[in-house]
Length: 184
Image (cartoon, rainbow, N blue to C red; front, top):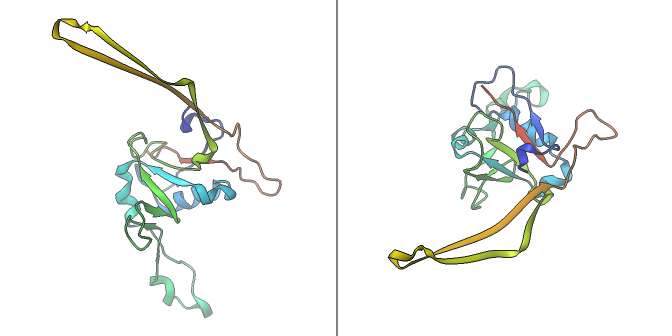
């Protein structure tokens, strides 16, 4: 089972004025809010590599007036995305303080699964059998004096969560995995 097929996945709606195939700060904030808070310390962002340019310019710009009604602090901003080797000096970029890992299996930009916030400690991987099955055959390419090798390793996985969490106080549900809906 993949993360996107999990019954416990939360999908965040796009913003009404959002451009197709884009990722904007309100998306990130809503995704962060819907990840179950105790899991945030182990969470990571899985992204399609094509999403990186959108994240690189992302910053929080205060829209409320400063102390005493002053608008002087409106030009100050805080970066939301820190590139790898930046101020954090880490091998991965950071978004909301958590690692951003570009992965080829992530969906195409603009579709569900192009950015996922997840705690992979909540996903269980299982193997079938006692390990790697190895086979050798000299028959397939006998006329060329070549041996053929085959290795089989069976793996499956599933989330530890069967459903989202509904808190006693509040209206939002929370999960171990949050994705952004398709933006077309």
